Amino acid sequence: MIVSGRQRGFTLLEMMLVLLLLGLGASMVVSQMPNATYRAAQESQRLAERLQRLTYQAALEGRAYGLVVQRDRWQLRRWQAQGWQNLSLPHGAGAQTLPAGWHLQLIQPGPEAEDGVPQVLLLPGGEIMPFRLRYFSAGQLMAEIVMDDEGGIHTDNKIDEKL
Image 1 (cartoon, rainbow, N blue to C red):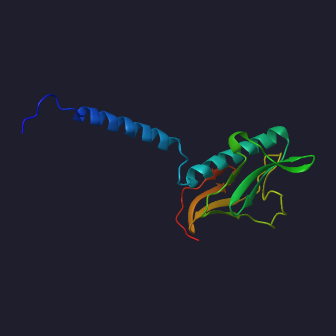
Image 2 (image 1 turned 180 degrees about the vertical axis):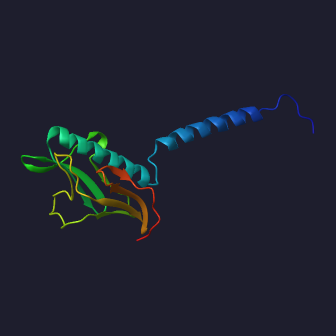
Image 3 (image 1 turned 60 degrees about the horizontal axis):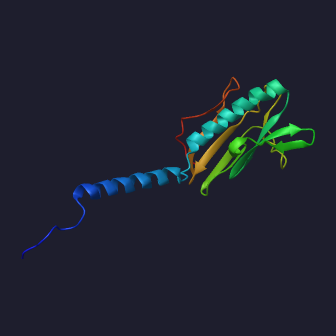
């Protein structure tokens, strides 16, 4: 069979360049999508840092702050003349709803708080009600926020128990 003229088609180099560009575009799109896996360790660290900063802010301002914990969400609150008000922080940092399959467990001494009243109080004198906040997924403890003996709030990395 005699082939006359030039054959038309893509060279291997051209095909590889197109695949590289498609891969780069796909990775950019995927990196902009919200992550499907919930990162309890990072989220608990962020909440611990917020609570620690609010402790200092409560002492500086002479104002009480609090944390309301429900099974699937938490909300920061501030005491004002009208009573407890939701704390509005940039980018929705004053509250969080956990993804499906996740839940919170608050452990603290004393009686249960009334509806709408924070269970964890950050008082103007710098006092904090002792507490332990646990993040669970499928019955397994994934992250924990604790208050240490000096009143500091931090995450506990020693997680080895199950519900």
